[in-house]
Amino acid sequence: MSLMKLKDYNTDDTIAAIATFPSKSALGVIKISGKKALNVIHEIFLSRQKKDIRKVKTYTLHYGWIVSPIAHRPSPFVPIDEVLVSIMRGPHSYTCEDVVEISSHGGLAVLNKILGIILKCGIRQALPGEFTYRAFLNGRLDLLQAQSVLNIVDAKSDAALETSLAQLRGKASREINEIKEAIKELFVITESSINFPEDDINIDIKGVKQKMKTIQAKIQNILNLNHDAKILKDGLRCVICGKTNAGKSTLFNCLIREERVIVSRVPGTTRDVVEETINVRGVPLRIYDTAGILEPKDLIEKKAIEKSSLALKEADLAILVLDGSKNLSKDDTFLINKLKEYLAENKRPCDNGKDVIIVINKSDLKQKINLSSIKDIKCLKVHLSALKGQGINTLEEAIFKTAYKNGAKRKDLIFLNNYQNEILKKVLGGVVSAEKFLDSIRQIDSANFSLKMSLDNIGKLTGEVFCEELLESIFSNFCIGK
Ligand SMILES: Nc1nc2c(ncn2[C@@H]2O[C@H](COP(=O)(O)OP(=O)(O)OP(=O)(O)O)[C@@H](O)[C@H]2O)c(=O)[nH]1
Ligand SMILES: [Mg+2]
Image (cartoon, rainbow, N blue to C red; front, side):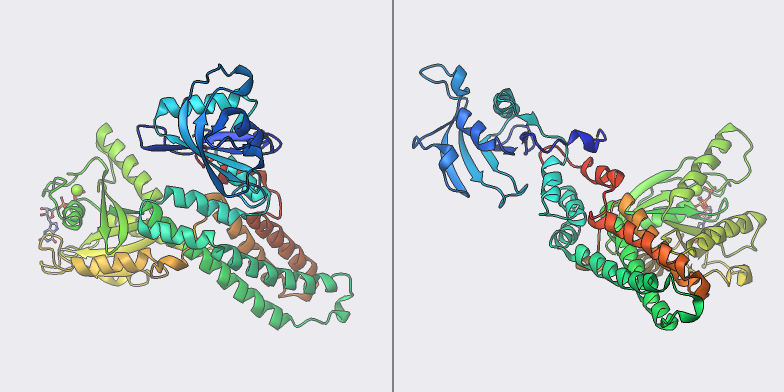
């Protein structure tokens, strides 16, 4: 989809678009919005009851024919299609402008012909998301609600739909606004102290810091909710990694309940990264089997390592498979250290990084593995036998717990796009720094500045602060006609 530029969304124009999927279907809908909407429909519509469509009441439905514009109309007229026209006058319409919807027969030819006639009357074809953009500009929706409109159209499951509808009804907006008000209150407190000499500053630092902690927790909660919502929408990318012969492919087959990939005693069996999508207790899991080779002997192995590393890098969840019947090798240690690095990165404030589960496989054999070096890794550890299928339930439970940080209560989830998520992390970052600055009263102006940045960023989320990139990131992903 092409990325639209905001400057192309000229709000003075009247716009029109086919709103339904233009293919063989019973009905099709064309929408027109803007100042000229009623005049245009007057030009091209013949009401069966000979009404002047410009004068009818709002929220009314009219039967008749689409015909050539008055100036070019042959007599007797030639109908282009038999239609129903609905009239919704601004400001009580989707865009808050005058809106006309034409319900015609479905099908590419009919819809294109009607749209063509409308465009001939000096109306512009709408750009992606332009109707919703106008609804936003005219104050009917805020940006979080606009994003939810996109998610409703995109929803592929009941759960995703339920979440998006809650957001459209303003759930996320209310939470973000509460956070904004709380930050504003602290901003005002710090602002009032900036120009005073240190000794005269009389604010309850402990109380303010406590409030900052509460705000941080609330923002982190929204980031977590978005993390879960993303999983619900796009699935969780889960990579099985581990040295050769650890039993990755056996585990992969076991989880997908199919002999999908080759398993063998020969080290280096798997070369290509293989992907399957499964459902683990309601978690849509995109699961990847990877190669265990770490030192390439030829070009193919080199490629295999590259592909596996990339898959691991992009994963939301890494399952490290260790062979419990053997001592840890240097390959195991290499991978353990790599995952430790990932987990350390997660500790940065506001990060929703990679999760890790460690599987100690081959529990049906005598166990020789020394677990002391993984004792301090904070993640779930599961003993199982992929060969016998013993312990797979425990692993599935661990996947569910790790995936849904909030237990996947659908109606509580919040969908943000990547750009919104990044901005919310900046809001959090600002409050975290402000709190640190307050360790010293001398730095109260820095704390105040950090809060100002947080306020600016949260304003971008609600749409009060203009942010072109954010608007484009939302509206350019819409389809034309919405
Ligand atoms: N006893 C026992 N053997 C297992 C278990 N899981 C895997 N194996 C055996 O271990 C060997 C290697 O298994 P794979 O699943 O191919 O191992 P892999 O990690 O995919 O290996 P590469 O693809 O070479 O990286 C095979 O002979 C499997 O049958 C297990 O739980 N118990
Ligand atoms: Mg394999």
